Structures are given as C-alpha cells and as structure tokens.
Image (tube, rainbow, N blue to C red):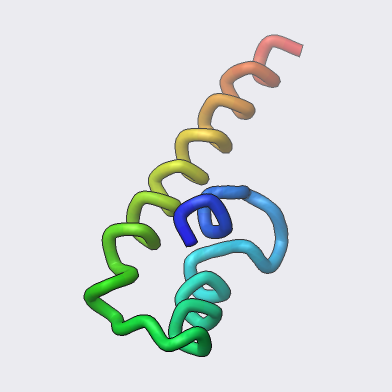
Length: 56
C-alpha cells in the first residue's frame, strides 16, 4: 500500500489506496501508517521534481 500510494500518478493516491486496502480486508488503523507514509513519499517525489524542473 505504501508504494501504491507513494507513486504520484493518477488513481494511485491516498483515497484509492485506502479503498483498495479496505476491499482487501484491512482495517483503518492497520493501513494508516502505510497510507501516511505513502502520502509523505509522494509529496517528497513531487517536491524534488518541482525543484529540479525550476532551473529549466
């Protein structure tokens, strides 16, 4: 779930990752750290890409 949420592409965000985990049978508190970590990972990736592209 962490990698699925952490990839900044369409339909691979927090909402979709939470829905997939719920449909598989995980509880909310079981997936919370992974969803939060994935959101932080996606934020970091996008931030790095923005700063790298700023000099273009």
